Amino acid sequence: MAVVKEVLLTKEGLTKLEAELEHLKSIKRQEVAERIKQAIAFGDISENSEYEDAKNEQAFIEGRISSLEKTLKNARLMEDHDIRTDEVSLGSKVTLKELGSGREVTVTIVASVESKLRDGKISDESPVGKAIMGKKVKDEVEVEAPAGLIKYKIMKVDR
Image (cartoon, rainbow, N blue to C red; front, side, top):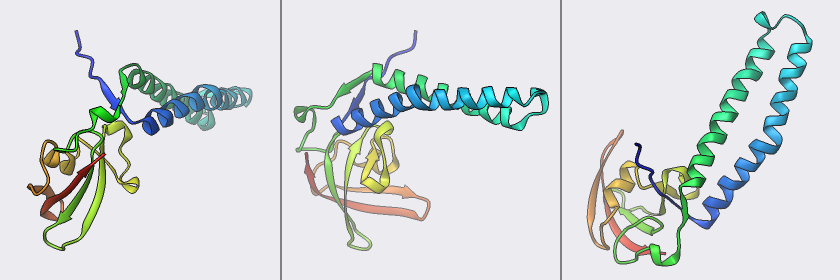
């Protein structure tokens, strides 16, 4: 029997996943069903690329719906008391200083389903996320990146 992994989500992350699921179920499913219906109306579906595209999109949408439902079924809303400030944990807002350049960046550690680098949300399973999990302010970590080894110092851990 497979072990069910609990997924801790922020309120914002939970809301986004629920909205995506609702959109896929209520709008995208109907749009694709209509595309399939139209493609079938064109006749011979054995060589109908529009039909194939629509069927592929339908499979993708159903897979995404299944994935979202599984994630939401195993989701638990992250509460303030879940987020530690004495060390880096899921939900922590962490200010890192790149020791080579002196550049500072602030990231929030989230579950992989919520990660979005451009919003400053990195996964606890990413190279940087793994390196800083459980570390404290003033700790230094090394991260192997495509550009080489990057060293960071943890400047601040907050909620």
